[in-house]
Length: 125
Image 1 (spheres, rainbow, N blue to C red):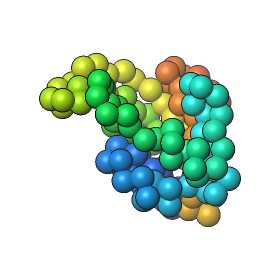
Image 2: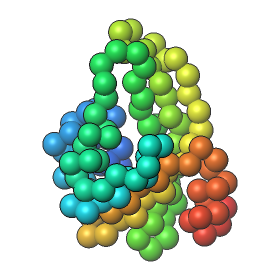
Image 3: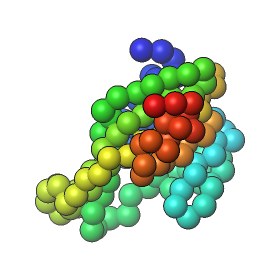
């Protein structure tokens, strides 16, 4: 493990557990979160993005592997959706997340539904 992969693991663990104070501490103050609704910048916007709304389905990221090159880490994951009321698995899909980490903090996060695309952007499969 490296400082960069440790930072990515903390990001994912705190996101999954909804420990939003700890989640914020994994982020650079000027973090960029690339979400489906466009980029979000800064810890406040990242916290709002990461906050689960009660009811329906909730998501978790399950890490299957990581690759690191310089300040970039690709996490190969399964995004799992659980029914809020029962914690029963509703669905899951393979994904990848491209992180940039500097000084032990996540400076950028971007999801990819196509793992090959994430790996291509990372520098190879």
